[in-house]
Amino acid sequence: MKIVDVTVFNLEMLSPSRRTVPAPCDGLNVLHVQAPTVGEYRDLYNAVGRDFHWLSRRKLSDAQLAAVIQHPLNELHVLQVAGSPAGFAELDRRKPYEIELVQFGLKREFIGQGLGKWFLQWTIDQAWSHQPHRFWLHTCTLDHPAALPNYLKAGFVLFKQESIRREL
Image (tube, rainbow, N blue to C red):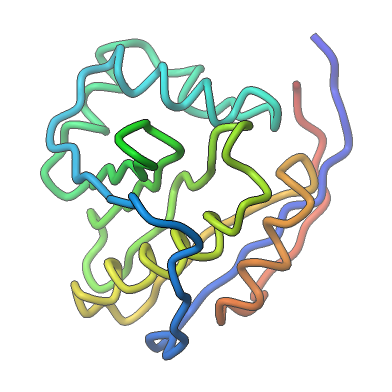
């Protein structure tokens, strides 16, 4: 096991973003997957997060993961491009008045096409449709280099930054 130094950025949004992001191409659709299977979720999670050393959901047993992802207040939204899964967003609405963007990303072959900016705005609009007091997330230096700038441009603000050591 390799241990690395990582900077974690905690970001929040306390009111809805008012920006409009045009669709970068035709054939975009976002599918709300209710009660996803563990296998479906792990396939998507690994396809999106493998290059960025996503770890949190990989550490959960199948039963633990099922309890989280199949909870009625945990939403899984899959971005589809011409019918192919291109990425996903996971919203955790289990705490009253706040929503966490737990996972967000695109598969490698869909990065760099403007899809992330559009899908992030779609996700922000979806979260605020539930009228939380706070929408928040964390990202880190292991994530795609465009992640932090995209979140900041979308209207999130930094509320905490910390340096940690974690395994890859």
